Image (cartoon, rainbow, N blue to C red; front, side, top):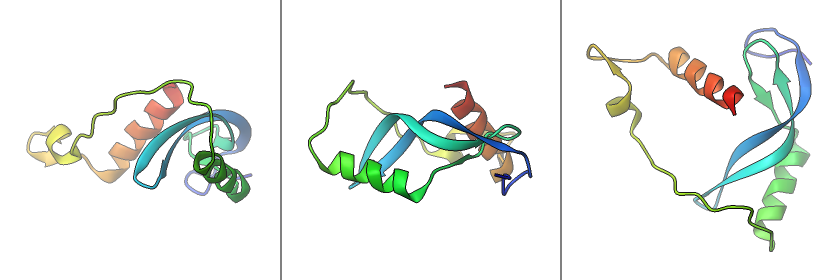
Length: 100
C-alpha cells in the first residue's frame, strides 16, 4: 500500500506496538503491520487491534514488567525558548520506533 503521509511504499513487518487499554499501557511484540519504507509510519489492520484488545482482556502470559516514566513534552523538548514543532516531534518519535 502507499503511505498516506509521504507517498512511500509499505511492506508487512512484525513490530512492537504500544497499546493502551483501560488506562494501562502494554507493549505487544510480534504484531503484524504495514510499515512505510520512507518515513516509518505504521498501519495496523482493525482485526489485529481488536485481537490485541481481546487478548489483553483475557488471561494472558506476561513476558516482562517494566517501569515507565511519564514526561511532559513542553518541559523536555525546549529549544531556545521555542517548543519543537509537531512535525519535528513526529520525526523523532518515528525514528525512535524504527530503532527498536
